[in-house]
Image (cartoon, rainbow, N blue to C red):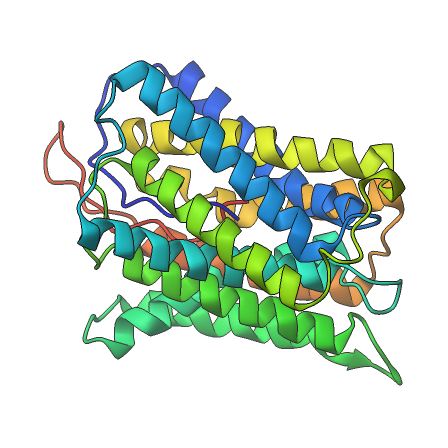
Amino acid sequence: MSSSPTSAAGRPGAAPTLIWTALIVVYVLWGSTYLAIRIAVETLPALTSAAMRFAAAGLVLAVVLRLRRGPGALRVDRRQLASAAFVGVLLLAGGNGLVVLAESGPPGVAVPSGIAALLVATVPLLVVLLRSGTGDRPPAWTFVGVTVGFVGLVLLVLPAGSTSVVPLVGALTVVAATASWSVGSFLSGRLRMPADPFVATVYEMLAGALVLAVIAAGRGELRDFHPASVSTRSWLALAYLMVAGSLVAFTAYVWLLHNAPLSLVSTYAYVNPAVAMALGALLVAEPVTAQTLLGGAVIVAGVAVVVSTERPRRVSAETRSGAAPVGDRR
């Protein structure tokens, strides 16, 4: 997952080819990060790999902003810095870190990457519940979508006969990750964040990386970490996560928020799981059962209902308004 910038008003005029190119980038790259996480943690310590990913991506983005915009590019006040750091800890240390933990471990313990993506797809549903708990009143169909989505979640983790389709502890870990990500997404539109989403992302990534590193050290990961024992494929997967997941796809996503309707951009929330499941099955032979397909289809249907009913109202031909986007940004 990466940062959760507040959506800006859509501006008409962007070429449809560019919009769909950026959408495909987000669909494929963010969908593929679940498999990349699984490969990275084969020989890399789980939270250490996540800390390295976000520290490197945050530093690269900071250098780019500094070079392009000058000395004051990253200047924020204390309140903005604290808000960005807090959101970053919720999104990256809590949200992404727990997903990485859930995907690590031996077969039967680790959650398959496609299943993790399906569970994370429930983030928009959790954010709706957070909104309703603070006095907001989403449309009735939104609650229908939430109900459908959570029925799919139960189907996904419910034991079939005497065995569970997914490791229960791992599944609950991913659900905890989605809760942390949902709270971070919810608060990012309500706290006093840096105005520039790229600047906010720098501080979110660095704060998340710092907390992940501290927890990794507490778990003994750094003590037992020997770079020479890490496989080439794990290093390549980590590099892919840094570049493709945290820099390229995020840049495309931020551009989309400024140039495409939020209802269209939000479709990544139910396309990413399909990409993740397909890649997991094709490349590492992750099992896909009938119950997985059924539960996943119900979850995606629920998210689709929420996204379609939460689309921003058109104010004029030139202006669109919308709420902060919610969902996993790997």
